[in-house]
Image 1 (tube, rainbow, N blue to C red):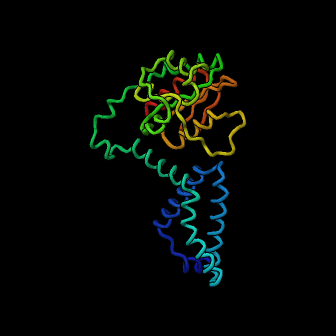
Image 2 (tube, rainbow, N blue to C red):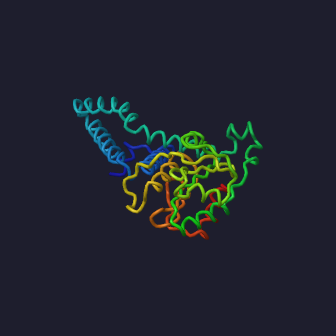
Image 3 (tube, rainbow, N blue to C red):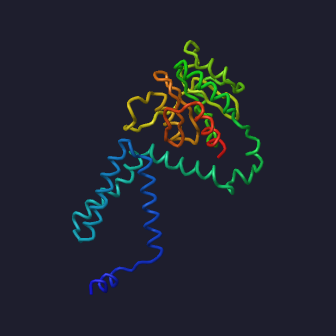
Length: 265
């Protein structure tokens, strides 16, 4: 009897299942982008308010439903203002994944041979420099460009355009060098710029031993598809950062294969 009533009121199609799956996937991606930030609390509050509005609307409580409907309607503009950085990161995430994985993108159709013109990065020189700087506890922040354009960040520092070598990297991060304070950007196996300013992550739940270099490394990988290598000035430990995630305490032997694998994608 109960089953008959339920099937009488509820019609379930395959499209409904796909709809639920897509909404769940969207909510999961939004959660992954804003977890660990202050925005997660705002998101949960708005989500609870929206669920409450749906319940009130289903119970035909006209006055309360109308008030909440007006708040939610105006709140769309407020959401854009409050979550502008998260929305930007979400659109960058989609665009970056599309450009890096879609073989039929406009870029590949117009410039089919451009991918082959990109020079492989000298990961051996980067690994050797990181090993030496780790032994001397010399702080370093090395950003390796992939698909995303990093010219905006390169222009915040000093343009170099030098060959990638371990000696050049170590000399840049030498503590008495005026270029050591900031990030080093490598593009197409060239040291593009040094002393660059990077955006810092807004994540609040990072371990206490992560310094500003680690926060900047996570921040730039949240905005772009770059791969970042960090050498801690306090501990000398090497970290590898990409897609907003960090591998901490790597050895030089572990660093090179990971770099080769990420840069080959």
